[in-house]
Length: 328
Image (cartoon, rainbow, N blue to C red; front, side):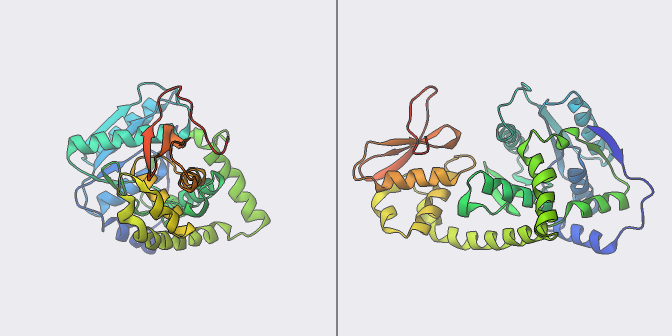
């Protein structure tokens, strides 16, 4: 990461300042905030302080880049400049098998910090451009009808996640940073198109805007809003049944297909299956459709679904254990 700084700040745009402050002011008075040192999280931290909050700053160093230690030091100094408590942790090893694994490791750190500090509310700096990228990634990875981007509020691993800037665009974040004369770190790996998210950001979205519609980004963002509202309603229909330990085969078979998918998806998420895909959901539906029990199928994240005579249950898959997948 390279240090960047906004220079010669213009007068703060009152409408933008109001838009950002109005959403962060609604957050709990006591909370944690994840800060990488990049533009987005520095804007969030500044807005939180400007609104009168005193968050605890958290930073996780993945150790992927030689300059990652400098990022951690920068965030530590930034927290000190605001007079805020700071906690950081470094990954034990820089070797990671995927972006998803790194994300899980980061959220595990957030959960540990939450427990030790006795604070469950965590503010994250995801913004509108992240939302569009996430939607496209979910579609590309087979999210099916469950692709809808991120929620402004979400419960995960005992954490209450808040994304107050989710509908603020990246260009508006930069405008805010310039107006507030903020410093931040530039992560050069964000330009590395070996990572799928970066290819979506730098190749797919510009292609859609150039070849199909210059308003493609905003159209996708509107789609996210609609899908989130619809999912809230549909999830309410199956929430209670999704809390049960096992899935009733008879009840599942008797439900409409759309309700089956929603029920299974929520049931898998509630039990910790990461990044639930449409393939995972269809695997469970296939098990329920079988006339007899005794079968099992592999799911994502090292889980397996097991069909007994009247119910479907989940188990962790043992290392090296053979398990059939309907997609293999």
